[in-house]
Length: 211
Length: 84
Image 1 (spheres, rainbow over the protein chains, first blue to last red):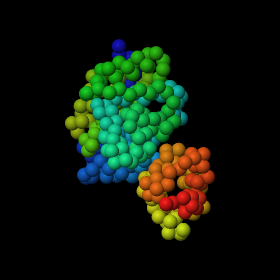
Image 2 (cartoon, helix red, strand yellow):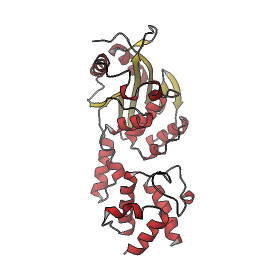
Image 3 (cartoon, each protein chain N blue to C red):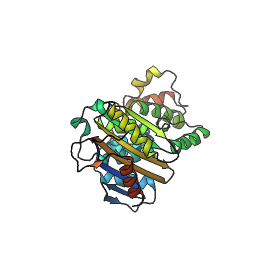
C-alpha cells in the first residue's frame, strides 16, 4: 500500500560511462573499460577513501552511486544511523567476482581480498561503513528490476516504523556491462516532492537508463 | 637486504592495491597496521599469500603474524631467515 508521506528526495544513475543525479548529467566519460571509468569517477567525486581501490567492480559501482547520491549530505549526522535503511537488488549477484575468484583458485592462488567480495551484499556493507549507516539492509536478486516489490518492501519498513530514510535501487555489473540506479526516500511533509510510488520509480529509472 | 626491502615495498603496494601510496613513501620502520599504513585484517591474509607465492614461505604459526608484519624491516628479516 502506498505511503503518502514518503517522497523521493534524490536519485542517481550510472550507466554507459555517464553519471547523472536528479536528471542532471554530472560526468560523461570516454573511458573504454569500467576500471578506467571508475577511477575517473572516483577522482571526479573528490573523495579520499583509499579502500575504494581494494573493492571489486560491483562494490565500486555501488560506492560511486551512493557517493553522488549523498553528495554534501552527511546522512548519519542528519538521521539516526539505526533508522537509515539500504535496500538494493540486482540480477547477477556477485557473479563477476565469483568468476574471478574461481579462475584464481584454478591457478592455485586464492586471494582473500577477492574472496571477501564473493557475496553481493558486501556492497551494502561498503555503503554502510562509508556513511556510518547501522539500520536494516537487505539485498534481493531478480532477473529484472522488480520495482513494485522493492517499493512495497521499503513502504512496509517505513510503515512498521523501522526507517526514517532509506537508500533503494538496482546495482548490476557483469564484465563490462553495468547499470546503477539509486534513490533516496524519506518522510516528507512537502507536497511538491516526488511521491514514493512504483510509477514514479519506474519513470525515473526508465528515463535514467534511456539517457 | 636493502634490495629485498625495496622489492617488498613494491610488492606490497601492488598486492594490496595501495594506489595512493608510492613504494618509496613507505618507511622501513613504519608501522604497517592500524595507524601507520592503515592496513586491515584482510591485508594480513594477502601478505601471507604474498610470502607463500613470492618467497615460498608458509606461515606455520598464525600467532607470529603481528610480530612479522609489524614493518618492512620485520618482514624482510623474517624472509631472510626463512626463505628457501
